[in-house]
Amino acid sequence: MVLNDIMKYIESEYGIINSTPCEICGGSYMADELEIHIIDNIPYDVCVCVCSECGHEKLFTFCAPFLDEKDIFKNAKGKMN
Ligand SMILES: [Zn+2]
Image (cartoon, rainbow, N blue to C red; front, side):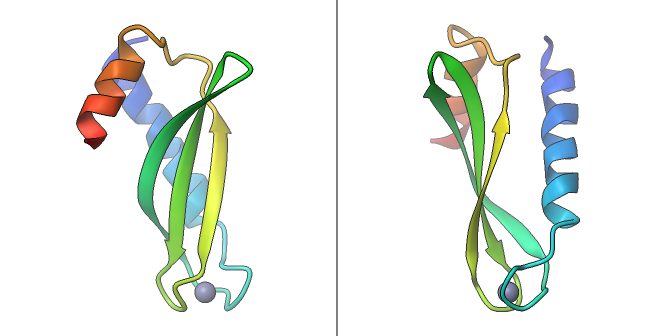
């Protein structure tokens, strides 16, 4: 999968985050941090989101099977650091 497809995937994740209201105040979440976690050999996108209204923190977890540990995973890590 090329980087462009990954960006599309992440954009769709942001779409889900943006359409999810805060469970405390109903405000909208903003993506704060994006991490890749490997659980049972399956990569997961873990997005730390913060409510723009009340600051409530919520984790969004997305299965990201397209992420190749060898190259994309490294690239993603490199970008975040
Ligand atoms: Zn809130």
